[in-house]
Image (cartoon, rainbow, N blue to C red):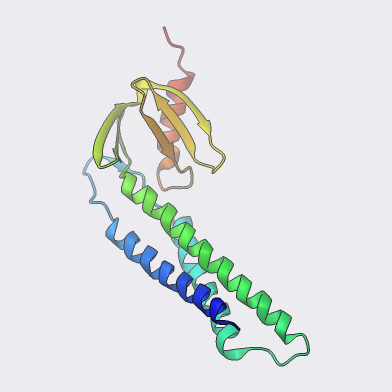
Amino acid sequence: MTSLDLFLVGGIAAAICFALCCVVLSIQPKKPGWIMITPAPLHWSAIILSAALFLFIGYIWLFVGSSRPDGTSQMRIAFWLSVIFGAGSVVAAFQTIRIMRNALSLRGNEIAFQKAGDQILLRCSDVVSGGRRWGGEIRFRFADGNILDVDPYAHNADRLIERLAEQLAVPRR
């Protein structure tokens, strides 16, 4: 165990704490009459379970260790597992923050979301194209040039994706 190892694990622990604070601060108020696209249990599970595994494996690496002949290699593997789970928790937290800060909502034929601090209001009928991106999100382009990325695993995202896909299937004049 080197000071660099401790610094890396401590940095990841601090990043997890920072990311969780950002998640709490990103909570958007509900809009009556609108269907809100919010993080799903999958997002919350990824944050919490990855952080729990980071803490558990990190605790074993720091305080328990191994007395087996191959203990050094076991602890090196435990260190990297802890780092990977910690980084996964941070990534999941920032994906959740992105969903929350978008404040994406749907009402009838209208879509509202936040983009660079501005409230954008679009009509579903203005969608011109859609497709899956390499990161898994679905990107929709609108006639006015706006681009909307939707996490398909978010709560109520399926309703929005369905509505926009229906509009893309309608023949245009």
